[in-house]
Length: 320
Image (cartoon, rainbow, N blue to C red; front, side, top):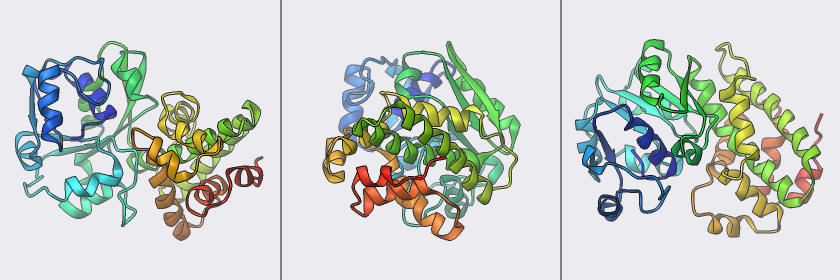
């Protein structure tokens, strides 16, 4: 479910291990172009598909009826616009979220929303995370995807569908921790991009990232007691690849702000959604309740939503 680069990379990966897939996209014109060109007309256009093995539909309820497993890969700001149209029963279906964001308005994790809105049991919900970029997954470069589920047999079963060529699956039971880490690493990648745009150097960037992983650990441990090692690839690795890579849209978004773009102008320049923009507001509001010390999150929030200059916000950080 979804038509962006992450959805496209995951669909391409799954088709190595699945006879057919059902693919829901909102726009019929994109579906028609995809069938004609045999690739996504808007994202990862070099990646070719055997469209004879894909059942495309712009009807989300038809997609739900056809599938036993739903893989959610749309941007979080538009998640409810799609999902709330579902009228089909989700009983017995597995829900896999690859969304790196918080559900707007209620500031809920995707798995929490699916449990609350549709009554999906926790053992039927999985998460897929990095460290990986869609572009490298699609190019079959070495990639390690983490699959989280409280039912490890389901994590293993879905993990086998992601293993092909240079792509490997790692299993975890830390569903909430993985989801929160996926949101926070985008926030920190914006800060990393700001430092890059300000030309403040690699030394400061290294300090920011080392402080960010500790900040992430403080928050996740405060909201979820599942045992975890914050240095595992799904936490630290995903933070590193998002903070440093040229493929990172959140880093690039922050870099534009550091170079002097206004937040509004930087958002307009972005061709794809910078999840960290929305994630920053959601996480700031959640932390008003949790009350964890999160100076980097606060600094990014000040830049994006309070009009504080990037130079001042970064200079004011007390990194240790």
